[in-house]
Length: 150
Length: 445
Image (tube, rainbow over all chains, first blue to last red; front, side):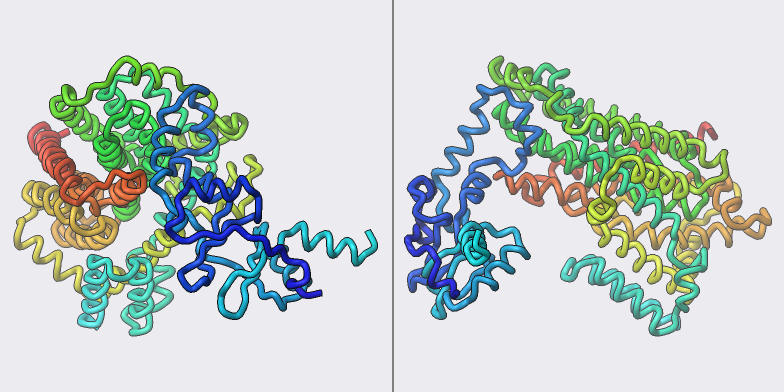
């Protein structure tokens, strides 16, 4: 089975200058697991995950220990960076080093990529560099389970 | 042979200073050339105590990095920093002064970069809560780490190198350098009070935010903290006794690091991944390049020039000591103090051989630690460590702080760092010069 047969094609798309708030809205709609950032020619240049948004919304120096040390009603750090987030765009927060697959790749190839790396989702990109779908770990697992009669 | 060694040395130094190519790459390539041109044989480079790699320095550095890497996972340093801010009751200058002292004490036993990497995030958070500019706090911590690191044998790499070359032990540094650093810190904090005391003010609401922080949440692994605290404490005790027990410092550190690895349950693969291998290989490369210059006679030429300029005698090296504080201080503000000290060490050893050797009949560590020679080593250590405060690129801790501050949206320009660092460097080196003059040439202690 080829990935084009099982990929999800209803995708959230953005441009580099898409505001932070629109990226959050796209994730809330849950059209796709990632928001795909494209250039003017429609080529994929990056993706924005929930992780990217959470990371951008937190000061880089804040770790889980320091966060626990703050009182629950502390708003100073949060407010400061919420304001900063309003100025950020997809280009600022996206991940641009991407591992992608082709619509003609096999389920086996996607399975191996998921097993090798820590990806949750793989963008499916055509020969022109345009994103045409996405496959998730769950998609592949369900297909494999089905082939084993589970 | 002489000119080949000289060309490799000058070329490597020039490229390292230019920062065009990573310094570890340059040092290793220079070392490879030193061996390939047969200036030094591989046997000399790996096995000769005078010409080759100083394995005492290498294993001391690796072992301390292992212990510190494990200890940082406990969260104890962040705990101390938040506790310090609360002890200061949220008063900005008091926080700055207490964090400076905490940084200096931590840097005396840990490496300076690790200390500022651990304390800077807390500092940024505290400054955010107080709604004040974090830059003076961050620069103060970088300066404090370089000053505190000067106080002990393990505090700063130049001291490790000097101790190993001259045969000085941990207590020598405590007895001779720690008092100088206490005076330097006291004078610096007094001056800082005059500069920042009236300038830093915050309201009661901001202070209350600091007092509301819960530092106990920062201790992530109390069991690991107990184990690593115990081993670090025993290791420091071992350092204080290593001269008496007849062990090299690296043996004590290796004992501590390997014991902690055994009892901590940490995965060695992960612990070793965090050892700063580029720094370790930078040292290895440098030792081989400098070994080549010693064998080829370049260092001997330098030492004859220094003797001609400063006229050291078997009874006094006053001029040399005074010049050494300033020369090493200024040089270290401009170039990395590690290659500088790596060059000065064999030069001073050569000088001791020439000036004191024939008269005293001594050689090796007994010669290098002759009372006439000692102040010169202390002058080198004080100048090389304190000189790093002069500029934003003078020490690794400064570079780290500038980078972290910029990442947090507070750019520290070269000029701004210089405005803080240069007066502190001049003041601390002047105090060091006065200390050496008074202690060794007036009081004769």
